[in-house]
Image: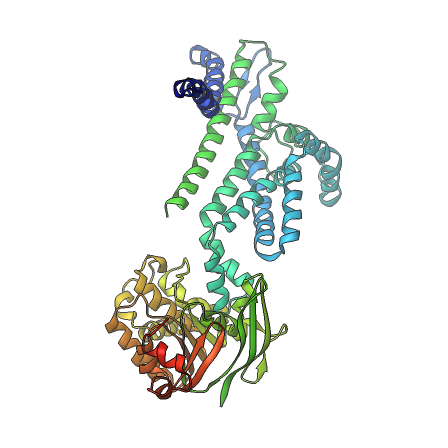
Length: 296
Length: 250
């Protein structure tokens, strides 16, 4: 083939590859703009106040006389469920990562890693189903709560769902610690646990923080499981046994019912913008933490 | 008194034998130097002594090593063994901790938690490694931020921190300037009153200055093991020793 022909063929392929490469950015921007566009008319809507949206727990979007659009209860529900989930998932995920990376043999390591990936592949509706039928009943039996579908139930599910992400990323973080550190510590008479606790954990600190943050991001955006398993009550929870509603579950449950272009519809989109910003901040901080680690 | 007894030590990496039946003793309060060209197996011997050879998955060891009369085998308490044998490796590995915590690491792992006692150990070990004056005002900076030579002295201080009874030095001075090296050598001579030292070195002059006995190792075999003055004399028992000591090969 002549040289010029080869060059001619090269150009469109390169363009196509570049398009694939930046497509993720295009999609993120596109979705963000679309969600913002749907929420934008709220600026000139007399029935809507941003302060009410953020700081009121009154959510009556379909009331005849006194419509209220406060999502504070749902913000509280979202963070309550997610933070409680992280309290369970972070130690469990770290422990699993430490075992897989530092304590078990190569054969068992491979098996466990496959199982962790399988856990990540379980569809969220299946988790929701398990929450509805299994964990909620266990919670009622153990705590005598009025309802099993509550904050604790959702947190348990979200914890299990974000553990695989935390385990894989934390394991990567441990793997990135040079073996020379392990050998130096062991040669000084440290046990494996002392080596892990005193040397590897500090050395992998940033990667581990990023693992938890990305697990948090995974949990906060989850919709189906929490919709099915948290009770869907608009109320600022006063205990972990209270039913709650999350921002995501609220959108999923109500968007289909809200008439297009209505205030209700637009407020749900604004909730989407809020969620988008929360996950953006979480992922950005995780990215910054990882970058700081690389530059060290 | 004999501290370490090595009998017919054989070691292979993935089926390739690199130590072909090495035998020697380490006596108490002596400095034994091991010299020899590259690939002689010097570092491998040290790694067998403190069982860090276990980290090499395809290494197979046979033959006998006993430390203070106790044979090293599968039941050995390796943590206690490694505390007994201090090890300084040629490439310094500063743990990703502060200078203070680097030196306090081993004592802490051994159960020392008293702050004053730890500070005392840190100062004493850094002084012995001739590093104290350079770092005493910045003990909390990370150890890996020190210069190469400082890191090497830090690993020396660390190897002394668990009060070893046997100290193995593997090319401890390659990144350290000659003046500081001489001062550390003086410290080693003093230490000999308390402990035994194995000195692996490519610097035959260093072996000549410090060692009571010298072992010349080549291709995994002991060519000669004798008083240092004999090994570096004009009439060692093996011709190859003379050639190596006089720079004819290696």
